[in-house]
Image (cartoon, rainbow, N blue to C red; front, side, top):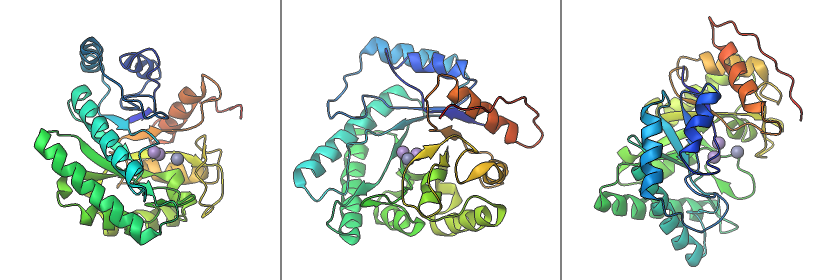
Amino acid sequence: MKIGCHISIAGGIDNSVVRAVELGCNTMQIFSKNASTWREKILKKGEVESFRESLKNSNINPVFIHTSYLVNLASPSDVLYFKSINAFLGEMKRADLLLPDPYLIIHPGAHTGAGEEYGIQRIIRALNIILEESADLGLKTMILLEDTAGSGTHLGYTFKQLKRMMEGAKDRKSIGICFDTCHAFAAGYDLSNKEGVEQTLEELDKGLGLERLRVVHLNDSKYPLGSRRDRHMHIGKGYIGLEGFKVLVNHKYLKDLPFILETPKHDEKDDLKNINLVKSLIQGTVLCVNNNFKY
Ligand code: MN
Ligand code: MN
Ligand code: ZN
């Protein structure tokens, strides 16, 4: 199985590989800059080379880059909209520099009051500007649209909305899907039991196509089904629960995809506990798991 988590790049991007290996990951997700500022990061040549070298010498593959949270491709403000498009292209360029097989994950956008239809059209237009520019630049980064919890005015909380965004894009082969279990559950897709998981994944396959699905964000949800609140919880400690995760990680549609955890990190052992717990849920593996989290 492919399992990893979101890893800090504190002290330099190349440090992330060491951290991931220590946790027993064979895939990971990183930010390629500080995710909560607009400031662009200029990657130093040495940093890029050292990162690529450590990656090559590890068994970590693939690596996913998550876009900064400020990017909003649905913003009704032209200033923020074009700033977001530019920042996103910067993210794509960094992904191309850093990774042999680059994936960039993004939350589609929030319409901030302008309406869902307006927001979806705005996202489609942004994707087309980005795809055209990235084709001109010869970038090979694949964009992965992530399903959201639908909190506030965030779009992409139904498979139908994600489908419309993908279908609006002129170059569909450069766009895939990241499926976040906490977000889907909070948006109303029941993943806490076998029937719910089956139904949700069939709907995902019919609506978006399984071949579009490239990665699963494996997170439990702190709030109940349909709460539209985006708060992640340790695996098995939220409303999805262990039963749901046991079905999810062993499901034929998901089991060969990379699982990335974005669970809380209150204690430095939290990631390791969550990773080991997920490994123990895979049929056929027996592991001794210390599952006592501090909240
Ligand atoms: Mn995300
Ligand atoms: Mn996520
Ligand atoms: Zn989230």
